[in-house]
Each structure stands twice: as C-alpha cells, then as structure tokens.
Length: 331
Ligand SMILES: [Zn+2]
Image (cartoon, rainbow, N blue to C red; front, side, top):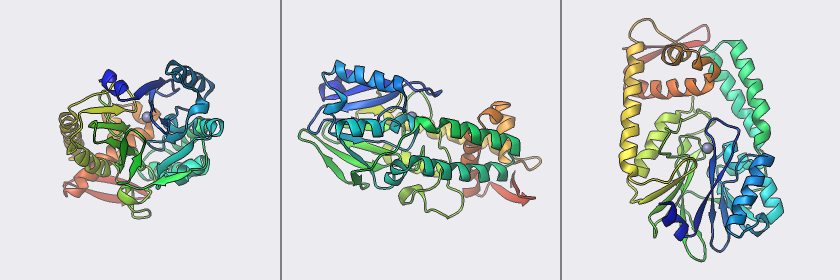
C-alpha cells in the first residue's frame, strides 16, 4: 500500500516526536503545488529529520508551495511557522482550525482552562490538576503559530495539477480533525481520525462550531461526535487509508465496526461499575486503570466521560451534583 501511495506521488515521511505516540506521519504530495500534509513537532530533531526525508525525494523545505494541517495537535503542526517562512508556502487549513494555528499559545491556554474546570468538577484532586496544568504548559513549546493563507470549508475541493482532494471535517479525536479524500485513487489521508494500531482517543476540547458542537452549549461530547464522524467515514469507498501514525491500511469499514464494538464493551463495563454507589468520572477511571488515572488524568477522564455520554444519551445512567462534584449512577 505504501508502494501504491508512492506511485501516486504521495510519500510518507515519519518524523520523531517526544510524545508517547512515537513518530508522526507527514505526507509529501509530489504534485503542483508541491504540498506537505502536517509538519511534525517544533523541535530541531524533527526539523532535521524532515529535511533528510524531503532530500530522499529530491526536495528541500524551500521547494514547498502548500502546507496542509490535519488537526490542532502539536505533533502535527509544531514546525508550521518555520516551514512556511522558509518556503513561502501557503498554509491551508479548515476554517475552524485557522484561529488555533494563528494563535496556538492563547488557544492552548483556553483549552487548559476548560480542562481544569472539567477535572475539578469530575473529582480529580486540586493538587493533581495544578501539576497537570504545569506539565501542559511545559509542552507548549512543541507547538507553533503562523498566519493561515487559505481557509478551507468542509466539503470543498482542493485542486492540484494532477489530482483533487475533497476536504472533509471529521471531528472527534480533536474538534478540528480534517481528512483529505482522493476519490479518483480511492485514497483517504486520514490524519488521526482513524489509525490501525491504536484507537484514537476522543480528548475533550473546546468545541469550534460546525460538527464539533456549538460552543457554550454544555460540555463537548467528544466520543459522541467521534462516533458520528466514524459512521460517515465507514460509508466511503476507500481502498487505502494513510494515517497520521503507523502503517497505511485498507478495510476501514471492518476496523470501524471493531471500534464501535470496543466502545460498546467499555460503556457496558462502566455502566456495571455505576450500579452500586454513585461514582465520579475520576473514581471510575481509577477503578478501570488504577494509577494511570492520576498520571494520565485528563486522558482517562475524557475516556470515561465519553462513554458516560453514550449511557446518558440512552437514559442508562443519571447525573447528580454534590458540592461541585458530579457523580453518576446506573438507573
Ligand atoms: Zn497525532
């Protein structure tokens, strides 16, 4: 499949990141304009590796003419400013993503404010919340900001001399997830929307509008949004998916069915835990993952709340608030 994509002028450039996920896949689309999808994190190591990878295809950073960004996470956009300034490439992102790219630090700070409120409300102790906020700030430097030259709309077609890519908003893993569909080659540049070897965790982030939910309308329901996006992707006649991490793959419909089944099992397990005393989402996370619920408190909280949202939607659990902390119990 890598060979098929390469034959179509799409080259995977795996770039190292300091994150648990390992390398991020950037893609060089060797067409007119010469395009890079995603940049890798803002680090000297990533920049060096990217330059070498481009050189293997006879290209330099200065040759880039267009930069696409798949979503708002640091491993995908950190080098965007350095690359855009050195090459003069036009940065193109989904309209909803543009403000986050243009002021990454301020937007990340607002995300952290939401995270802090959510963590306290769902039972995570204040000292853990304070520590996590400091960790998050210390990571900020892996990100980057740059002016966005062109704002893309959901459903718009991006033209190249030798291909067309349809721009599709598929929020859930993050509110800005964008996939790029080459209908002629039945190939989907999937970003982190769907990855073969890991289930993309729907992290709770501020809604950006559109399909990611309306801002200010309660807590963003990341997993509910993600499952709706997966249902749309399942119907696509894709032959090859090129993901943001790991190997290219096919048979996405079967993979999506597996993911649906996995989320069902997890929701059922959580419902089981809520049949006794009412528990906060953090208490549920501790019951499921022990100490990981502390070191990865926000990730595991997002995971639990995502599934609680499914149960709430079906009327299988109810919510009660006492002293500013929310607890859930099965009905
Ligand atoms: Zn990623």
